[in-house]
Image (cartoon, rainbow over all chains, first blue to last red; front, side):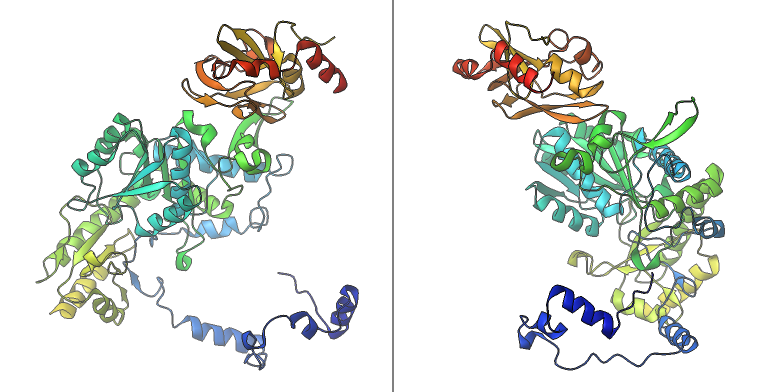
Length: 447
Length: 130
């Protein structure tokens, strides 16, 4: 950020230009009681060395994933971020606040986005992926809007297995266009198919499930697809692309739109964002897809090149009839994912999935042997599971912090029905020592 | 003289309508397709959809622009040219023939008289600098 000076002389010049006597005059319309009557209590300026020391001291109060064993998940995961990612994205050609889309000037950027789209489409088992949206939650909300536009139907059925935070974002999005949402209940950790079947009808635009769902459990995507398609509805699946290297991709199981949070693909957790919204569709839906899309073409000399394509879907051309208000993407996070997938390769990505699943199952078994502790659900899970505890999950979390363990996410704040539950995520980064230390600390905490 | 068949009626948004009993066949004019350039995509309503005179019923997209399609007449869509999404270039090649878009069962036959005659539409096109 460039420093823009604002000296008293410049202030006088600006005030003279707009014909105001003083800055105080500008503020005179704000009621006195709404204004701070004393100067802000900002400490005096510090020398750079002092300031850095001060900030370090403040940041060391955070329990961060470098110093703590992180079992937090619920949408953001502590997966490995290989060091080449940071080096490559720091290149000046990529590391800019603005994403240059002009084909004449930006073949490298466009190419990297094209590769990203190809990788995401393949992981999701879909035909086309866009250049990314903001995060998993807004991707899902866009998918719901899109399903309404495609089917010209008014109701979306959302499984209660979908991340509650995502569901809140969807609720916000559908308020304006006045679309309706219905919640499909869970059976033992996964969507109750009989209940779902009764809810889905000729008014249903889409059925939305998460795979694995918020509680880590694996939904029967194929069965849900059959229910949705029998009623002429679309199936929207929210998925973590990290897991899709190992799981059958939703596209192969009947999904019409696949969205997801791509953070686990080489994007650090950074206290919850920026994240990476994955969005992929079947070919026949491509003209209804929101967001930017890079395509491969040939130039006048027949050489391969990359350009933004199908821009007539977008707001800067289609105005109020655009497929979405999103005319941008998270290019840098998409680049991180692209580099991550390229470094990991097919074998590496699978390994991440295998290790995460194996370690999660070892942890679940170990924790489940502690008296009073049990797995909340018996449905198959992937890398995340809900524990039911005999003591307050909040207090258990606090207790384990002392052992430098981030034990998980208490589910009380999402749903009172799960007030005794703790959601635990295990990635490939967790070691056996960390899991065993967790088990020992948990046993002591609930004893 | 532009290509403006005398037996059709027209809108100022450059759609044509052809009366077929109590129905009307609808498309865009030769002038419209010329102005648009190569048509790459046509989005049409489904059979059974209701259209209203001078309200949009679909979208035509060319390499240069995206334009709304305006229904010349009100009624129910009883036929849709399903070939167009697959072969949008037909709109350029044969706008008054194979490039037709929808057939509307008229809700109000009197609306027919509100449409422009070929002579009036020809004047409009001429005034547009053709």
